[in-house]
Image (cartoon, rainbow, N blue to C red):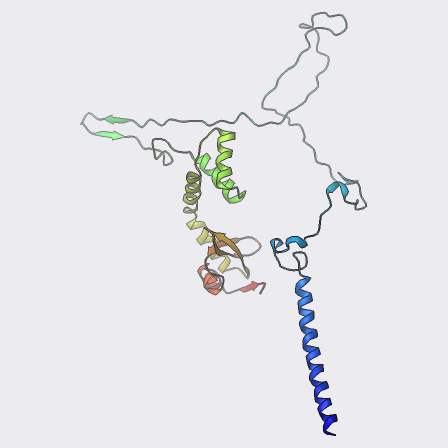
Length: 276
C-alpha cells in the first residue's frame, strides 16, 4: 500500500509538471509566432524572418483590371476658363502650295493648356530706413518691419516654408538646406533652419493654451504615447486628442508624470481613454 501511495504522489507531481511545461510551451510558441502583422511588434524587430514581398508586376490580379473602375467618377486635369498667359501659334506658309499665310483667314483654333510652375528664384528686398531731421534739430528714424531685424536676414516666406517642410513633411534639415539651394538658389545653413523652426514654435503659446482648454472640457479624450529618439536618448511623445484636436508633447518620462505635465488629464471632467 505504501508503494501505491508513493506512485500516486509521483503521478500527481508529473501531471502538474506536464501542465506547467505545456503552458510554458504555448507561451513560447506564441512569442515565436509574433510579428508586426499580428501584434504591436515594430517592423524593425522582424529581422531576417520578414517574408519576401512580390513585386507589383508579379502580384496576382484581385479580380479587377488596373486603373479606373467602371462606374467610378473620373479625375483628369481640366482646362481653366481664364488662363494666366495666352500664346498664339500661327502657321507661316501653306503646307500644300507654300503661299504666305500671314493675312489668311483663321478658320479654327485648338486650345491646349500647360500647367507649370513659374520660374522660382529668391527676391531680395532692400529696406532703406530713413532718418530725418526736424527744424527743431531732432532726428526721427522710420519704423522698421519686424522681420527686417538684421542687415541681412531671411523673410517670412522662407521661414514659413522651412517650418512646413520640417514639421509637416518631416524633411531632415540637411535635405531642407539642399532644397533651398537647388530650387531657390538660397544658401541656408542647417543651424539657421533649426532656429527658424524653434522661433516659430515659441509663438504657439496661445494656441496650445486654447487647445488644452478645449480638451479639458471635452466629453472624452484619448491618451497615448510612443517612443522617439531625441539627441540619441529615448524620449516619449505623448498625445491627448479627440475627433477635432490633437495635443503633442515630448517628455523624458513615459508614465503619469508626463501625462500630468501635458496639462489635460488632471483638469478634465470627461472620460480618459487609453489603450492600456
